[in-house]
Length: 264
Image (cartoon, rainbow, N blue to C red; front, side):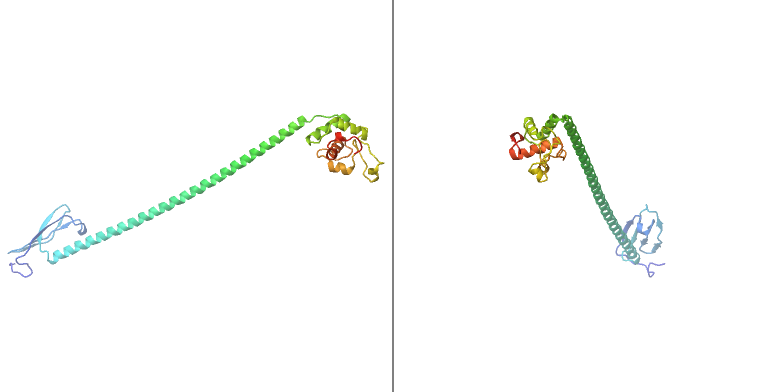
């Protein structure tokens, strides 16, 4: 064909040389195109080359082929860039979600640990409190038992006779701060009943009024009831109970049984 054949460029204004090494968007092979101007123009069909080869060609930047190639490369680069942005955004979102999930999980664990710790502390405190109470109760019982043992050990045995009754009465009076002496009790006993715990007066005004005097110190029931000391028998004829109640009455009215020298 001649140089004037239609469809061929005549006298190119500008010749470009480009080097392309493996365009990923176009596949694993590179595309080469050589356009040689002048008489006897020859067109060489594109050939696939390996990705490591470099191919040079001259082309017209305004040719449809060059424009199509440039547009294709630009479009693919835009697609790759958009995909990269989308992937980066998706990764950032996934990372943020994972971070939020990890934070929520850590907070939940911390809260659960705090609750477990508080529950364990409350349980330990309750156990310690119960143990302390049990220990205090045991100590109190031991002290009471020891006191009772000491009391029993200190309590003398009194004879069941006038001397023993007076001494036992004085022992009880001392515990209740009731004044009186052995002689004070003895002299009034001898005057009132001659030492007979079953003595009763059935002829005086008290007897007439229905409340006869009874016992060692001849007390009437209302007096015995009012001045009875807990721990003694509630019986006017009981010698110790009678002596203690009478001594308590005498202390209230006369200051002491020792101050009584006649009917009282």
